[in-house]
Image 1 (cartoon, rainbow, N blue to C red):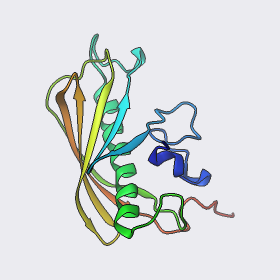
Image 2: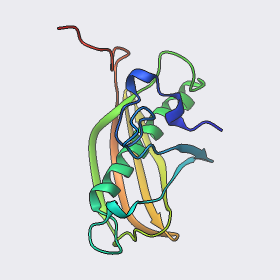
Image 3: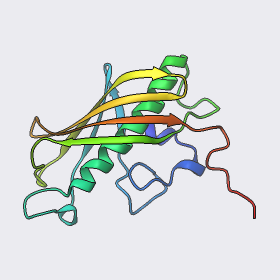
Image 4: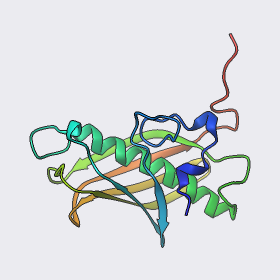
Length: 157
């Protein structure tokens, strides 16, 4: 089953967090799980803040990219369209708010779950929770903004 990010057109698939065209990035993969979305991510040793725990910036970037992918999938679902149809729905972050609930262990796989709070015009609000060993360690809210169809087109000098 293809992840949401697998449907991103090549010209907008370079994001550090979710872009399949960025070999140095997280390359997260998000899927529907009922009315929620889910991503699994295993931190690397270099994602350490202090021994045993993940860097907070990693957690924020996982929430950010999981949420924008969720926003795109939600917009396709709301429009009754398949994710491989054009024009592509592509979102960027309008705002990101993260609450760190507990230190996130670096060992093991993290589960990132999102749910849609609101779709209004070109704006989608997503609440995303990071879980380690089934315990919520961070929760974020992203206001994702749909970009115009020309987004990602190279600008000529």
